Amino acid sequence: MTIKDVTAAIRRIPDFPAPGIVYIDITPLLQNQQIFAYIIELLAANHLENPPDYVAALDARGFIFGGALACQLGCGFIPIRKKGKLPHKTICKSYDLEYGSAEIEIHQDAIQPGNRVLLVDDLLATGGTATAACELLKELGAHIVEVAFVVELGFLAGKKKLHEYNVHSLIVE
Image (cartoon, rainbow, N blue to C red; front, side, top):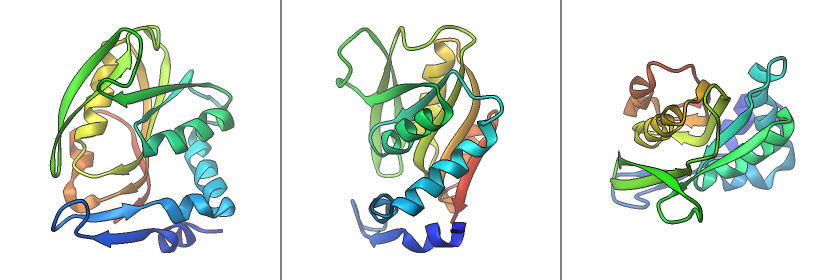
């Protein structure tokens, strides 16, 4: 298994959800157990010797990788959800997408100051979602050890918004 196998398995759907957007469909990566396991292995590799306290992941596709990664690293999992989806007291951040705007939130008691957190999502595009998630985590006092992605759309320069963090992407397009 190589990263080329992962890249080849990604399905690209033009003009979804809006004209001019190429949707990166990770479904084929999930359907292939060997590819999925390999992705989790690669995402975990930097943290095996010093696992974080938590893996935080973004709603919704980030949850798929985040939950498996937390299990692999033997740590807790924190969901960062779309506004209105968490039942307890939350803090919220607004952000811009490449085709609109949205809000995400996290439980106020999700972490304690100083907890080491690995943030993961499936895709880095403009960086708005990940930046908002980092701001939420920092507001709660987290030490963000890495922001990891399966795919990064390098031409959108989202990584620049995350310049103060260690950003790791398995695939850069």
